[in-house]
Each structure stands twice: as C-alpha cells, then as structure tokens.
Image 1 (cartoon, one colour):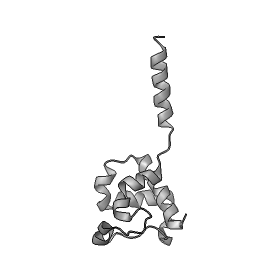
Image 2 (cartoon, one colour; image 1 turned 135 degrees about the horizontal axis):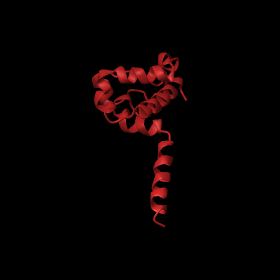
Image 3 (cartoon, helix red, strand yellow; image 1 turned 45 degrees about the vertical axis):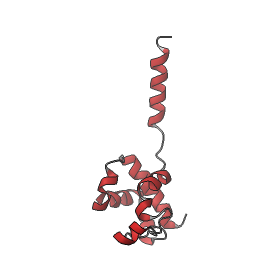
Image 4 (cartoon, one colour; image 1 turned 135 degrees about the vertical axis):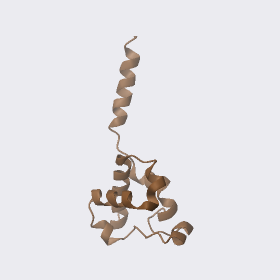
Length: 104
C-alpha cells in the first residue's frame, strides 16, 4: 500500500505529459478577444488595433505550422499572451490558426 500512492501519482503525471494542447480552447481564451472567435477580426479590439483577420488568409494557410508558430512568437503585440503559453501551446494554436485560414 505504501508504494501505491507514489505509483499512482507517477502514472497520473506521466499521463498528463502526453496530452496534446487544445488549440481551439487556447485560441478562444488567449486570442479571440483581438482576432475574433472565428478569426474574422470582428471585435472592437481588433478594429481599434487594426488586427488582421486570420480566417481565409491564404498566406497563413500556405505556411507551415512551425512558420505560423514563429510568426505568433515574433509579433510584439503577443508578448503578454506568450508569457502564459508553453511552446506546445503555441504550436497547438498555430495548427488551429492554419485551420481557420484554410476555412476548416
């Protein structure tokens, strides 16, 4: 019994490591206030900040996931948001953004 708790804890934490980040949920909680829930840049903040629409953007759709992630990280307007996200989170958001751009 005394080995059961550490074993169960290690299984719990190792299982959590393999879970993929949810790009849609991360986008909704970190990006939608400026880019819009559907990537249309149709929020008051997007209009005030002149944020580009991501949905239907052929340039973004043609980029690799790694290039989209790099573009997210390189944008100085994303600084505060990037402090909260891991590299895996940014990669998941990049994949989701590519889907918005491609119209999926």
